[in-house]
Length: 431
Image 1: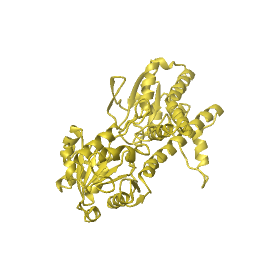
Image 2: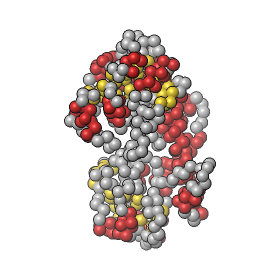
Image 3: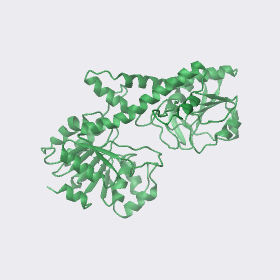
Image 4: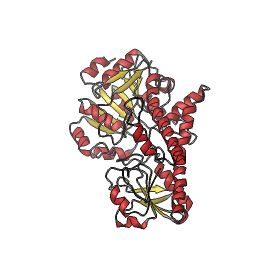
């Protein structure tokens, strides 16, 4: 069996990344750029072909970075999982979606674990990064791997380290975002922490994999609950005739004991709408009712309907029925300045608007086309034709858009993101 610690320190450790997406690609490139040989494993043949040509399918990763590492032979990609035998450390970065019932779908993790089991050999280090419920690494992954006949902690090492990728974030990336890691035993934790220390500036070891698993869920449940609270405050302020954005700005002046969160038309992305449900599901199996999680989910998921309700009111005030209105949604991505629209509230709002009978179009500089309700839509241009719409609905506040000009050309603007902050006009309606 290889001396894994020595192997890592000398950068002879061959690293496998299973799942070369928005988590796996930046991580793999960071390791490859740090002097390790990295092999990406993918089931998507289009991604494999694209990467081999030096093309990136992740917005935050430029093509030039992939081409450089391919040329240096520091990076390669394959769909042949039998090559896992040749790897020393295997990091799993596969998706973990929710089923329609909001139960965790860990099928991708199981598939990855089974592929590793078939090719597992003594001395390998396995690290799971996919967001999941506490207990997954020890209760699900470990038994699958031990079906190989090898024993965890003796023949191979196993740990969990939560991904902390924030798409579109220009300040924090893989390198300068601290990495939490916890193993099934002390040696697994130590080896994982050592490996990550070559790719990130700070590693924070915790006592076990379950602690590492729940850390990720805490981070995003914290955000989901606080966003729900501020969304509810927005509803309260509407009833009271107050401007919720002004209330938040005033509260921000307190230098201690307050952290600003902002309301919106709903929550989206791969983390906040999903991760709390992993913790909630786990706790229900232990006969514990996660009331904050359930309430936050209910409030946040109701915001698209609230937006439609406000639109009904806005159009009625201006003498037009929503069902006969032409509406332009500005921004479909789940957050500013990215092309990712997973779980975006804009998609729900688009569908709900179409059900009212309104004619709906959208503009998003990052999303040229999208399919909603089985129908393909293309991003409409933002020009003089904006005045043809009865209402412009700002759902995602991309920084590249000229909101002053948009306001000038529009008949009415419903701003669900405070993109028109500081502007005063009878045409503006705010969440």
